Image (tube, rainbow, N blue to C red):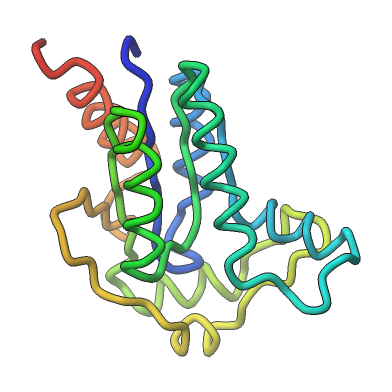
Length: 176
C-alpha cells in the first residue's frame, strides 16, 4: 500500500472484528491496535482505581498517530460505540492527511450473534468477555456518516477481509 492510512474496524462484541482485523493487518504489513488488549494492559498495571473508560481509546489514538507519522498504516479494532470515538479516530487520520476507512461489522442473525458471544474463548489474558445481556445492554449509537458495513452472518471471513482490503486499496490509490 503506497499511501499509509487508518483502517478502523468497529462493531459490537462477537461480530468478528478481531477475526477480520488480524489478516487485514498481516496482508498490509500494518500496525495492529486492539483496544481490548490496551485496556487489559492498563488494568493489569494496577495503577488505575477502576477499569478504564476512555484511557484505552486515548492510548490507541496516540499509538495510531505515531504509526501514521512514521508512514505505517494502522488497523485499529474496537467496539467504537459512540459518535465521539468515531470522530476521534477519524481525526487521527485527517490530522495527518491520511485516508481513513471506517468499517462496521454487524451480525444480522441474533441467534448466530448470541452463539458467538456465548462460545468465544478469551484470547487476551485477564480479559472478562461480556455476556449476551451485556452486549444487548451496551450503549451503541447509530453511525451518522457513510461507512463500510459488513454483515458477518452472511459474509465469510475471507470475503470480509477481501472487502476491507479492496476498499483500503481504493483509498490508498485514488487515481488507480
